[in-house]
Length: 172
Image (cartoon, rainbow, N blue to C red; front, side, top):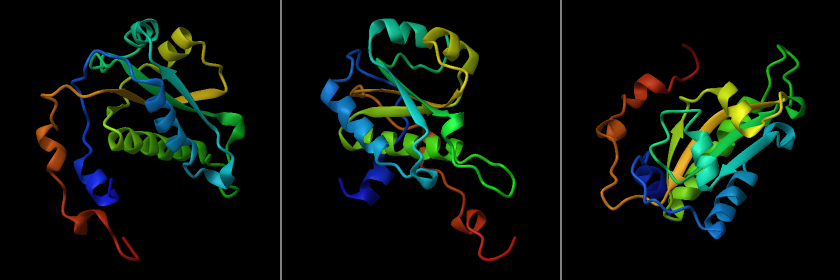
């Protein structure tokens, strides 16, 4: 799909068919995340794929914003594998994980898989339910699946602030 069309048409899907994603589709989506740029190419991302009834049942213990999606990907980063900014010690890994999540989300839409980026989840519940090690930090949850025929964008999806309010040239 043409990039401009892709970014205009993608929306947060909250109504899914009850079937798990095909392995081929998961591989395509993960391949896009694998190509995402990361600080110094350290690739600290770790992606937990949940595509079984059992894993989705566990996910429902961690968030109310699962929208009954049949699949999900939890994007995390390994704290010990991040590039560190020398001036203030900031880690690139949270940004890296967000870039990876964006790649996953756009790749999913490109092949007809709907997704919704969810921040409303309990990281500790995720750790406990999925045995996530302490050095791995959950950042973003993509609930996903094949959209129902009646799936549509939220009314606010096409509402934007004027670009003059969000892009500042040279000085604040």
